[in-house]
Length: 165
Image (cartoon, rainbow, N blue to C red; front, side, top):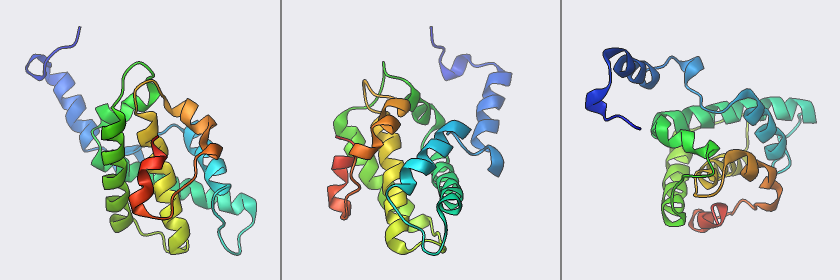
């Protein structure tokens, strides 16, 4: 049975506080396995000029770190945690709203100078789209990642809805 915020012990409240104010290396919700897997899948969607495939994947790991940290800063961790649950999640309508807002905000806030702007947009849309898609009811992050090759990244921000359908 869940307890209300008023029922939290001081230790539990401080844990929430410390999670919210975590230092940079701890401001991530994706696991090492998830980040590596996404880097490989993202590498199938974009090309980093003048870099071999191994170097591209290493660069994309850093890009995913940036996006994961952005999501950590802009989504409540309790929301972000539902990406691993198939039995609870958000509605399709809410997913569409969130993916549009978050990708726009992320594109305004995240600058990755070593990627061409078009590749940066694809990376942001791809990662945020997969995270929000995984937060939908009856889905989870592992299933969504496994089917990521079937997901096309839209050119226009108006078409972002297809990322969560």
